[in-house]
Image (cartoon, rainbow over all chains, first blue to last red; front, top):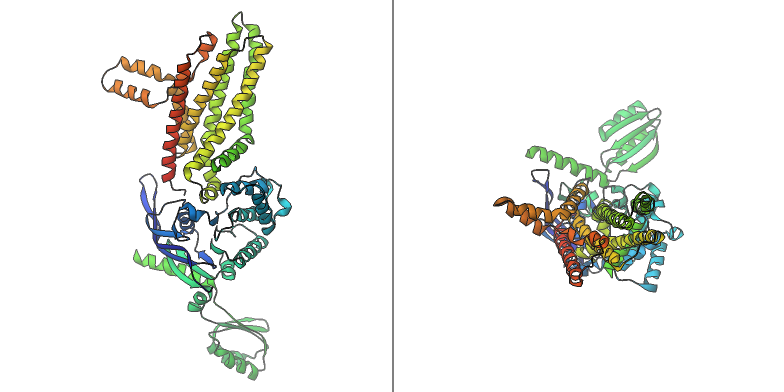
Length: 320
Length: 253
C-alpha cells in the first residue's frame, strides 16, 4: 500500500436494543472505533454474540446506530452512492432457492441497472471466478452449502465493488470449502479490492488478514497487524524432543524447562525461551542423548484471543 | 426498473408456491360445482352460478392475498435475502413496492384464471355473460388491492400470525362497516363516536361488492365506478405509504 485511503470508518459507534416485554436496554456495541484502509484484508474477530454482525448491519444500513458515526467510502452509511460501490454477503443466507445460479445473479444485476450483454458477460465472468460455471443452470435448492456461499460471493461482486463486506464467510464450511473461500478472498485482494470480513475462525484470519480487530461484548480489545498482535503477548517457547536421555541428564534439564513429559524412550521438553536452547542442547550432548526435533512455538492469534476473552471475563467479574 | 425486477422475482416466487395452486384448484372446483348444483335448483339457476362464482373468486383471492401477503416481507427477513437487497442501492420503499406489485401480479393472473373458469361454466350452462360481470370482477380485484396493502402494512411491524389475524379481522369488519355506522346511530355519546371513527378509518369493503347488482341486473353508474376505483386506489396508496414509513425506521435484527 503506497497511499492510504480510509474506506471504512466508525467513531464511537454504539447500539442498544430493547429486549423483552418491558423493553430493557441491552448494549450490543459500545464506542467502537474502526478504520479500514484501501486494499487491505481486514479481519473483524470476536466470539459469538460479540457484536460483529450488529456492526456489519449498521455499516450496510440495515440497522441504525444509537450513537456515534460510521462512514463507508467517505459517505455516511446508507448513502446509495456508497452502496453502489459496496458488495455484501450476510451470514448464512438462504437465497431464493427457486432460481438458478444465472437467474439469481441476473436479478441482483438488475438492482444495479445492469442490462443486456454487459450483464450476461458479468454473470458468466463471476460464475467463472467463483468456480461455479458448471452449475450455472442448476436451481439453488440443489446447491451444497459451499456452493451457495460461492454464488453468494458472486452476488456481492456483481457491481464490481471496491469494498467487499463478508459476514462469517467461512462458517459452516468444510476445510475444502474454507480453503476455496480463502483463495477467493486472496484473488480479490490481488485485484485491488478492500475486504472486510468477520469471523470466529482465527486460523483463517491469521492466514488472510493484513490487520485484524478483536471485539468482545461490543468493545474493541485489540487492533493491529496480525504479526504485531501475535508478537506482543505470546511467550516464544521452544519444544524439544530428545531420545535416550540419562536420568542424570534429565535432572540437569529440569531447571530450564517449563514442562517435561516422558513418553517411553522419548522426552518432550518445553523450554521457557529461545536463549535456553543452547544450554539444553549442551546438556543433552553431555548426557549422550540424541535430539529428535527442536520446534519454536510461535504465539497464535488463538492464544491472544483466548487471553483477551479470559481477561475481559475476569475484569467483568471484578466490576460486579 | 428496480421495483419491476423485485416485482417479477416475487411473482416468480409466488407461482412456484404450492399453496397458490391448492387454493386455485379448490376455487375452480367450487366454481365448477355450480354445474351440479344447478341440477338441484328450480329456476334462477344463473343467479346461483354468478353468486357462487364471484364469492369463490372473492374468498380465494382474499385468502391468497392474506397468506402470501403477510409473509412477503417476513420470509425475506427469515432467509436473510432482504439484507442482500437493501445493502444494494435499493431504497426500502422500492423493495416494499416491488414485493406488493409482485403479489398483485400473481393475484391478477389468479383472478383471470378464475374468470375464465366461471365464463366457461356460464357458456356451458347457457347463462348470459354481461359487462356487469366484468365490472364485478374488477371490483373484487380492487378489494384485493386494498386487502394486500392491509396485510403488507401489518407485516412491516408485527409477526405473521398477528398480521394474519388482524388482516382477516379488517376484512370481516370492513364488510360490516355500514352496519357499524347504523348501529352507532342508535347509540349516543362515546359509543357513537367510537363506531363512527371505526367506520371512517376502516376500509368500506362493501363498496367493492357488486354481486347483488349482477344478480339483479342493476347497472352501476359510471361515476360510481370511478369513485369506488379512486377510493380503493387511494386507500391502498395510503396504507403503502404508511407501511413504507414504518419499514424505513425499522432495524433488521
